Length: 316
Image (cartoon, rainbow, N blue to C red):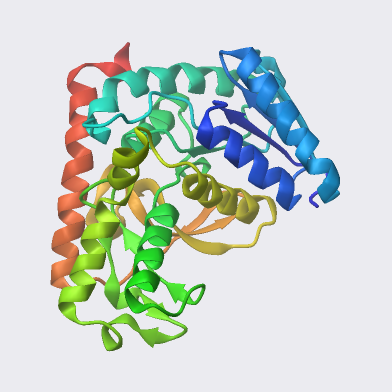
């Protein structure tokens, strides 16, 4: 365990609570604080998770509050708070509602935990990452959106299901915004080193790509709300990489400042995660088809950002 490491989670809903559970069970930090405006909800979940950790030998201390004073000295703050997707609702529909929620939260984080690295989970993910960066006036390495790891894990699952073998041996790569315009990269996907294109036909790969793009919406259609086990697990992987300074490569949503030819926009690209958050942005050589898809993804996110700018959101 990394002694003294503290993680605060804003939002004690399904994703936030599951992040807390995974993190406590994996014993990678000393203290977890869950913040929620409904203090009883956070208290109940914190107590339930804490009681689950004892048989596992975890020394992680878990507490809850509605008071942001509790996040002081956090190494990482995870933001999961916001309105969830509901049936028939796109991530874009959430824009203004969650932008205002994120703005309020960031203002409190900059006051009580000014040195924390921020992980954004709230949707629409790329736009909320941009909001956090601009409202908090952060250096871009300190605000990271969780999306590509989740999208890649979904693609890996669909590849395994299609093949009927290779479970746990699939490596998939997804770039782009967290939405229908994400960019799955079969050229950079493999099964224990065997290229995906050597195992599946073009038609089968395209089926997997479409399932990946709509993987979140499929879960919403079944449950009436977004998934939380896979998003939480993906978030914990990011937390562990930062706390352990592992310098692992993960696809994450970050502010681009010239990479891939784009400026002042957030999109999902491979990054090196370490103690300082984003240590490096990795620029993959993309073919023309991939560049076109990535351009479409950037344009989709930019439309959301344009809406925010036109509403004078950042001058309020």
